[in-house]
Length: 385
Image 1 (cartoon, rainbow, N blue to C red):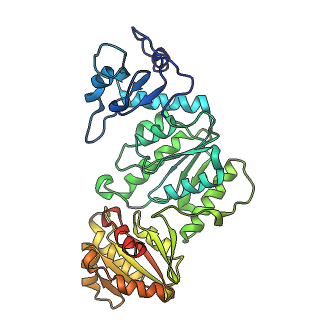
Image 2 (cartoon, rainbow, N blue to C red; image 1 turned 30 degrees about the horizontal axis):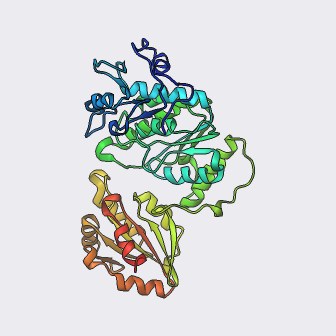
Image 3 (cartoon, rainbow, N blue to C red; image 1 turned 60 degrees about the vertical axis):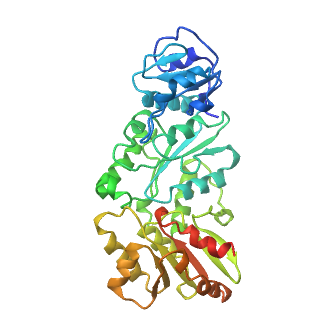
């Protein structure tokens, strides 16, 4: 449920937003972002996305008995505002102030969700954190507004896909600890260059209450992805004043983010959620070349150098037996003509029998690719057998 602690009536929301009281007041039990779910004692906040405008549904929400925050001139239980999104952030900030947990913001090109999951694992039931994929400019306030009133620790995953995504957030919200896990050339098609990615993500540093509480994962000299993340978590715990040593082995990665599946006499290493060359290098570095086969799909949104990057991946991982799929890896392999890499075209061409034999022989299979490569479909052919 979404709610601001301490706001019980429509007039309370008006006061919080510094606008005149409504002509008619009512109790408000929760905030809704879907007009179809909005009803009496709800307040509907219309979000403007890339494919829809919540303002188109304010009147149906009113018809259902809900109050609405809107930029339009409407009659009934309405609060007229200049900018709905700025009001959303203002309400999120008020909820932070009224509950006042220890607030951790996490951003970076990769590793955000794993760090978030690790912190949730170690901090326990009094920790509230972002839901899966709820990390964009809307997901951030959603996470804050869904926080239970007894939350002691709040971990907010912050993802940006283009310039300016964090501009208002960095001005309106605050945090106690700010973590940058990494900076890499993700989403170059929308950002343009690496400097734009860096500048966008580092804007969140302005949210820090204490400027020294900044953890910069780029400065952690550790090529092992797992140890890199553990060091970030240890540093975070130090800022929180938790000095007990952590049993990092008790944390098990979630599906697609490094979880290991026992199968036959080997293991399947599920890294299918997404891929960037650096995450491939750092996660593959944990695996023994003599007993690990890599099954890789194309990496997306790498800009004009995408082909050369795919070629570099195959060269740098030449110690491993590799199977690849996707147009970019196909082109890369055509240029390299290496003997240690095998291409497959899709599901019908997937070398399942060969890979199952490797598992039977005690080898491990490592799967990774961008979301568009859908590498989980190949992994499932083996795990579901």
